[in-house]
Image (spheres, rainbow, N blue to C red):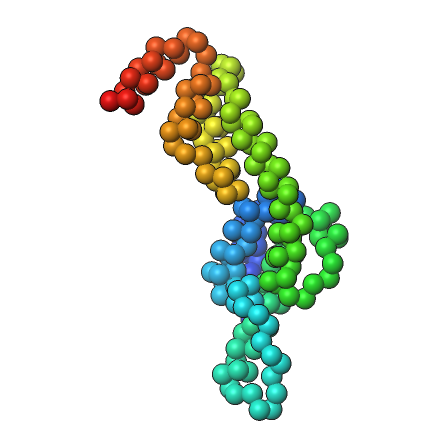
Length: 183
């Protein structure tokens, strides 16, 4: 029991706090960590029927496992939601329902963020305030963030975004790249 609590706390400390703008990334981390801890049963299955005297040992065992998964899964999720959001959520006693509610409530924020990131990526220009390497890494990070939000940026388009973001003195590089890609 003590080891379970320690493992839960340790995993929780490495999960990004849900802040209202990072649902996709947060949800992915929650599902991964609960899976590693074998606490994801309640996320993927409905609550089993209550156990009775007539219930088999297998049914009793499954109910106990589901209940354990649900209670700790709820705690784990709540531990990783920002306080200002946590206070707005209704009291829910089912981990699967809590995850669904958070997704429905903040799905539009993810879509809005994706639009903002796509806009940033397409108009981004190299201004010399950092190295070209840092500029490309920043664009790569934006593309990775878009992917985590369900918007994959195709490789050829991404390379073109990078090339288009360079100033006119990189013209010879742009020409050479276009010649090489056509071969």
